[in-house]
Length: 475
Image 1 (spheres, rainbow, N blue to C red):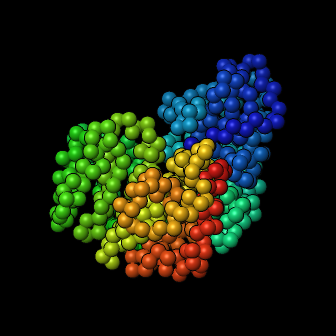
Image 2: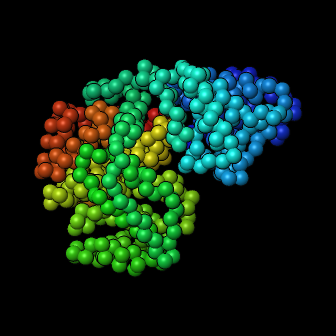
Image 3: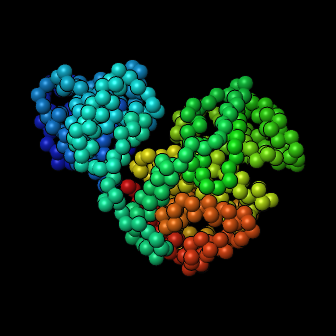
């Protein structure tokens, strides 16, 4: 589902007194309304351009919905028993009827909306919505005529951003100042374009469940495949084994891991599964390893409460961990490990990739995910200003013991924003190029100079000034 933005616009509403339930007080955009009780309603099975994403035809879609809702007739909100009743943002998912007219369907008929079958789920009106969209597209109605190049794909969120409305591209670290929108947009857009253009990877994915375990995210393959597409030009495993386990299944998880990697020895190998699940209350998160054949292993330790954690339900944890498998594939092929690179690059690349791969088709959800995991950088009276960040990034150590003097999460959030900047300036492949260069024995500084054409020392102050502003930016 798409984003929740509270915008009280001057769209005139004269909803009839016959409206059932709470009154409609504002139109957020073409597929979302606000009710008098403070709740929001997201129109089921359709998607419209976003108001704050500079998307083509956004205002027209909003006005179209307002016009339909201003017509005479009893307004009803109808749930669908085959689909979710509430989305992850707490919005009510409904069809809206004015009299006997299905407004969701009417919006598609006039080209103000497109069908969007979230998670591929179809229901009673799906065929009608798709047929209406095909007819509107063939006739060039609404957004289909106004936004050239818009694709009809009911399994993906609608994207109508006209190229001429996109923020200017960046090609230098000198351009970072004041361009938070461009950094965010092009970091996301680079991932979107790469995933959409990449061919399907030759990757087998196995999901292994412990006796007392379960899958929180049944669509665990998609985020992994998207990361594989992100870095399709670089070495990758051909097989991924995901070990899902709870505290009760730690011994099972450890034995399963050892069966995949019988030649690895040492204390770390002997307690690998336990490291992510040391107690029942701290059994949370993920970890990775690559076996002797370069095949990937992902540990997903979980508790029942993780069933409400978006990191587990959205697929971001799978995307994050598989990015580490990709990093390992390059490093280990040259006999190196994660200490070869700065720890903030190791985790930052994975943190950026989890948002980019999971939400490549929705700029707002990408931005919201990034904001969710970088909130500490924008808290009132934060110490994490540009001077702190510059000092933090001035060390390129890959020794985790060195980083224990800092809050561990800074490796993730500061590193993620750094990687966003690198992608916005040079493209998604520049991260893989950095990884390759360091795998081949170059230092971080040497790799940076070679790939970005400027020294790390010269770029760092500009990057440090930009990161707090990117963290505050909301699309």
